[in-house]
Image (cartoon, rainbow, N blue to C red; front, side, top):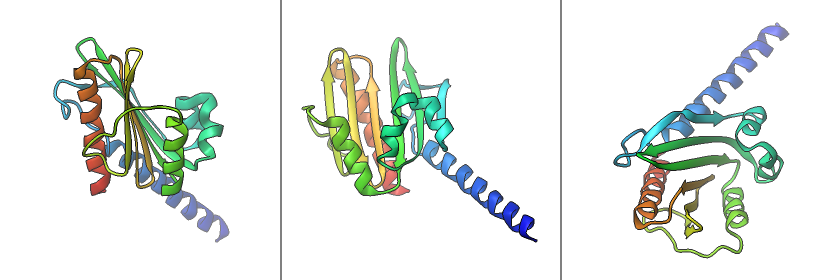
Length: 169
């Protein structure tokens, strides 16, 4: 009887993890949702336990655990010779998402992104454009490798798409 309960509990935990895994992925743009940008399926990975988080963030995991990271999904996109990387993290609380945003953007100046909920920051320097934002208990970074107006617009488009998906979830 006790073994049956233990197995049932384990099955529920696994089902919850599987549901969480799919949920983060569904918040990210599929291929061509941002015109011309295609998912690089070889560089599309989710992490829903500590081992998986180490596979993505390696030595940064202990720091992220201070902010209550629960799951993450990292997806790379390509458009001709351009690249973009999106990191979406689900944290345990809204307060932790806000604190991680403050931690990642401390000492950084940039501009806000219209159409992105909560707090955002667009930074373009040294050949890279990054949008940071937090919304509810999510923290997201979008990096495009270039600092042209088109690179900034691509990063903003990714951020707006993800923010809208989070708002609807």
